[in-house]
Length: 133
Image (cartoon, rainbow, N blue to C red; front, side, top):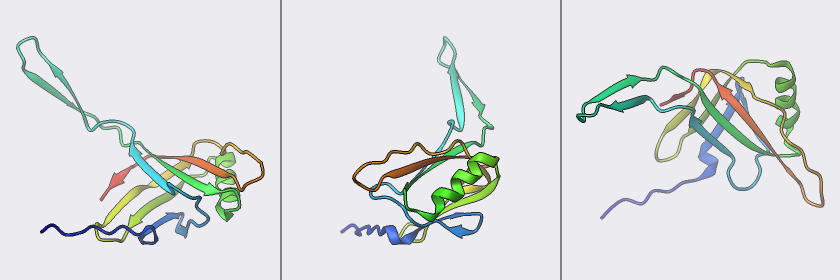
């Protein structure tokens, strides 16, 4: 019989410059993706493969925060000043995972909406040395 995987969002911690990010919105708190594949393949007319290693180490981390999160002001400040900082996502649950890098920057200020409910602020963060461990 196969084991049961249990996920708990409380096991996931995101840090920016050593500070634990708080004030996430409902749903997806954080997402991470490498910007390019690790290699490219070109096939010859005879079916022979040539592989080119991609040395692009860029990745993107997206944080979805509640507009009341104390990190909205900090990330807007970082976006306005192009400040570089380390960012790490750590899952300390059943399947351990660490994603991020030592050098990152906020791509732009989050879009803002105001209405009769608490809104979200979505920040895209470019990671210059993106790694997955």
